[in-house]
Length: 371
Ligand SMILES: O=C(O)c1ccc[n+]([C@@H]2O[C@H](COP(=O)([O-])O)[C@@H](O)[C@H]2O)c1
Ligand SMILES: Cc1cc2nc[nH]c2cc1C
Image (cartoon, helix red, strand yellow):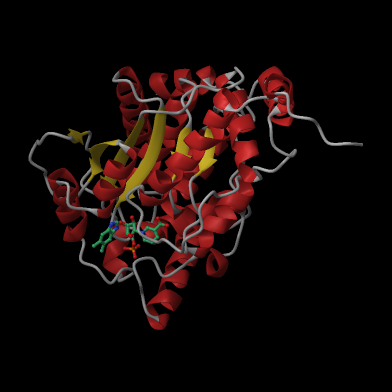
């Protein structure tokens, strides 16, 4: 818990001076004002997060794929067998997954983290074993995790972020692998935004209409059973609650009740990057739902995040809207693994590189617009 508390305490909001300087600099560059659209906001956002304008170019990037299993799989919410989680970990380590191809394209390192795979994995290069449990309990019957397990997974994510930054990473990209984790993601999105299950639950890896209807019912039951159907879980206001409980307690309870171990670890990874002022590119719906938990623990963490893409899973749009994040890429991806985050990395770098390399009207002797 000390690691989590210290990490939350270290997270700073965006620096308004750096934001103002970045905006003013954008407007002096040799292009019509606003011509780089959403990329201008990315450059400004990263300057605010770094506390300096221009922000450092966010490279080299490091992808962490957090893998875990889910007790709710027993409810038939995924068409895939649970062992695919473990088998895909093997595929990542062998370099054979889509995430490996996309990582090679952007020269990102790939670290796979076992925070909760049901099977015991053999140590291998590229695999970090931080197993908190052999999967979660079934969230539709009661809490998926204890708060202690959620904190252990959060702290595993924080430590992975620190290790990757110590090894030279200047941009962190979130990734996940966990059969049935879109059910937990939908439940987290409902818990943290107050949205209804039907709007937040999607087809995941491709369930049919009957299974989708059952999945919505499972998400509803999870929220009811865990006492999370009464509006959004209150974000931490800082300080202690009425009975002396820490301000983070409701968020931790919600995360533990309906999250997965990879969601908790990704939330920690995001917090860890933000505490070190290293930007974090978020992937799909699993990362988006984990970011909601991170933001409920430390609201300023959002200033350090970029939404890499918007996945086809309907809850993802709800999560991003709640976080106030605009996705850079929309390609109807629904794979996870960090693939959407990896695709966005060159866009984020390009947005920042403009600030370092493009001439100003003054320096290039280009005339400005006539009034
Ligand atoms: O990233 C996304 O938005 C996304 C959307 C749908 C599915 N996935 C991936 O598919 C797996 C979970 O799907 P499911 O149907 O088993 O819940 C898990 O390994 C995720 O990485 C990921
Ligand atoms: C094959 C497969 C690959 C994945 N990658 C992320 N989630 C996945 C789910 C499946 C089923």
